[in-house]
Structures are given as C-alpha cells and as structure tokens.
Amino acid sequence: MKLSEFICQENNVSQSEVMFLRHGNHTIKQLLKYKATVLEINAIQPINNKYDFAHSDKPRISIVVVIIEDKVNGVYKVGDVEAEGTNFTLGSDAYTRFNQAIEAPSEPSRRFSLKEISSTSIDLAITGWTGRERTTVQRSCGSFFDEIMIESSVSAIAASFVNRVQKAQKDSAEARRKRLANAPRLPPKVEITSTSVVYSRNPDVVAEALHLAKGICQMCYEPAPFISKSTGKPYLEVHHLDHLAKGGEDTIGNAIAICPNCHRQAHYGS
Image (cartoon, rainbow, N blue to C red):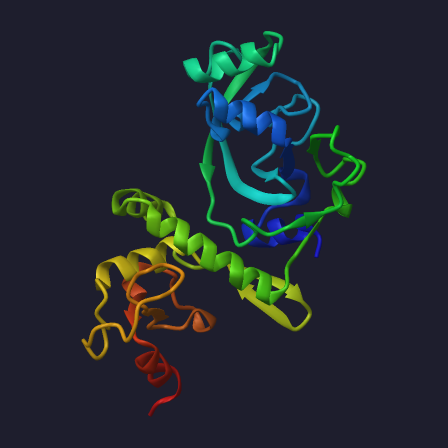
C-alpha cells in the first residue's frame, strides 16, 4: 500500500499536506552521540529550504512522517512556528554541539511546534527509498513520493502494535496520561485492502488499562492466569466494552483488562 494513502486516510488530510523526512543512520548516530533529540532535528528547519514546513512557494505541511532505517519512526502533526532564529540558536546546547560537529552552516530557521501522533504506521517497514538516500525529503510533488510503499499486512500491523504497547508500558503513567488527554477518542480507520480495514488503535490505552488492572482480571477478579514470556508481567487482554467496529471509543473509559477466558466469553458468550 502507498504510504501516502495510509497516512492520508489515518489523518484525514490531502497528500499535499504530507511530507516524508528520511534521516540517515550516520546522522542519527551523531545526533544521539551529542545527546540531542530526534524531535529537534525535525522541528528546526531552514526557512524556504526544501525541509521548511511553511515554504512560501509550496503547500503548508500539516503531517510529517519521519523515516529511519527504512521504517516509520514517528508521525507528527505540524503546528505553529514557535520561534525564528538560526539552526544554532533555536535548539538546545546539545543540538548546537551536533550542528558544530557535522559542520552545518548557520542558516535562518524556524522552530515548529510538533505533536507526536499515535499512528498504526509506526515501526512498519517502507520500500521505495533504496538507492535514493541522498534525497532526504519527499512532498507530493516529489519524484518518487507515490512510489514509497508501506508493509500493511494485518500480521505486520498486529506485530507493530504489540511493540508499541510494550514501549508505552515502559513509559511512566504520567507520560501516558498526558498523551491520552490529547488523543482522539474515536480511532481512525485505514482501508488496507478492498476487504480489510484496520483501526488505528492507541497503544497508550492498552498500556494504561493493563497498568490499572495490576494483574487482576476486571471481569472475574481472579489473578492473571500466567506470566507473559515477552513482558515478564501478568498476562491479561484489553477489551473494549463498546466495540470499535460499532463506534466505540478507544479510551480508558471504554477499556478493561481481562483474562483470556473472560475475553472469549465477552465476545462469544451469552
């Protein structure tokens, strides 16, 4: 499936509002070496450069998809310009040291507000950029924007979601709840084939529901039946009381953590 179609369906935007931004392994290695953040390198962009989300001669970018190691690393909603200056004055001291290390020229720049979006595309593999690594950005008018494809099989999406839940579980409850407060209540739908639709579920909902349950099934009130090999934590499954397919919300208020037996009963019992 085209990455552009996936992102546009998920965020209800036009292709002209989407930018793909690819960072090379060496750049990320240097960035982390100087303890700068990936968020900074995406938020600070030279004015009227090809990376500029608000380029005077191009459509305004509202969604930026960040690609690292041929996988979707993050999806961000582009907000207002927070400040103007240069790439050396707008970031942290660590980011300034990074720019000095790579001998970047000082350029008039903008720092944009970026808000990370919970996207089903995160961690999914992309193809179509191989051999074009020197071209680090693509807009809808780009030479191969429509050739960038995403691995959108149901199995790949399911595996990616498990990884995203595990990452969310490693965050603090405070960080999860802050993201949940700004998350959409109804999950977007993405049509991956003519007969298959997936919901862009929020991994924070699953992680927080499991955290609140504390290893106890919220239906039968018995301890989880076993410990998960992958997480080392009591195994429970998160169930939406009002099903997503029937308009249910992807929120903590509509989710409970229950044992596999109760989960089957909730779906198939009388």
